[in-house]
Length: 59
Image (cartoon, rainbow, N blue to C red; front, side):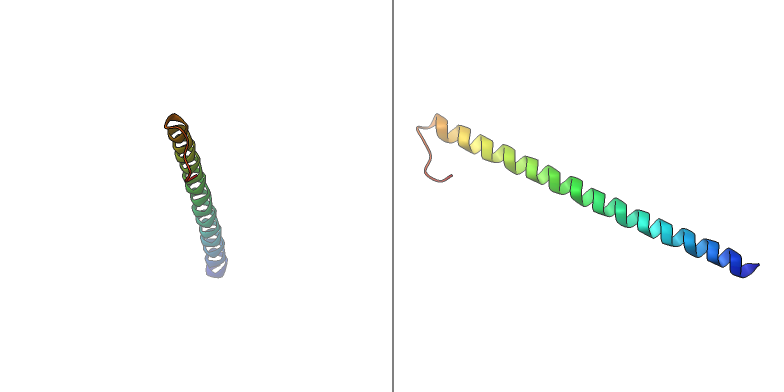
């Protein structure tokens, strides 16, 4: 009886660990996406600034 309970607890711990790993991976992907969007916005702002000042040679 105790062995069955240990097995159930072990299975639950494995599922919780897998879920935590997926949550971490998702958080990393969201952070990476946000960084990409920020970089894209900064590049667009740089291009706009350069166009406003008669061209830019450092794109």
